[in-house]
Amino acid sequence: MPSHGLPGKLGRVLAALVLSALVVSCGARQARVEALPEVPESARPREVEPAPHPEPKTVHAPRRYEPASPVVHVVRKGETLWRIARSYDLPLAELAAANGIDDPTRIRSGQRLVIPGAVRPVSALPAAPPLASSAASWSWPVVGPISSRFGARRPGSSHKGIDILVPGGTPVLAARDGRVIFSGRRGAYGYLVVVQHDDGFASWYAHNSANLVQDGVRVRRGDVIARSGASGNATAPHVHFELHRSKRPLDPLVFLPPL
Image (cartoon, rainbow, N blue to C red; front, side):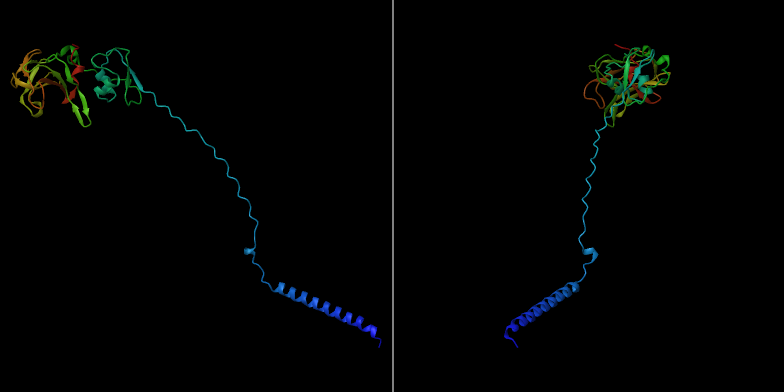
């Protein structure tokens, strides 16, 4: 056998062995890959869609509310502040204060009055008091400055008449013809005289130092019926004067003539 052929044959054998080893290695690697567990669908990464941009919000300007126009009552001929206040269910003092009126007996035809809290103007006023109850038929019991007016003083309290400041002992006069139905002492009023008049009115004169008339006597306007004082709930001499009709107190300034 020639010696030069051995290396060639040996080379071919070595090449065959190397090729066989490579084939076995690739097969083992493929077997390992095929043996790996399959990744479940839920665990596979998904493409995340970008979040949509929020729509811009429309900002509305705050709505402006205009206050309702106040109700204005135009005074007609023959109307009084008391009748106007009564028609709108308002205290006379509140209506007078809202319009800067110091003397409720002095309003004029055509005057414009602001009505607090009213919704609409009232076209028909209540009937006027009878002629006998007009200011011409009443007179002042005394003449002096008014220290307290008719109406609310504070929440839950009201003043049922007017207080007229005069020195103690001043003669107190009957404001109209009538009959005395009470003369005596009554609680916070002190010494009190009550005169009943023919048309349902009654006049009260309180805090007297002395009463000069007895129950049941008839008096005429201008008669002296008492002396002023500070009896009862009073801190200084004055006359507390009230007017009532059907047991309801009314503002005397509506009925007394201007001084």
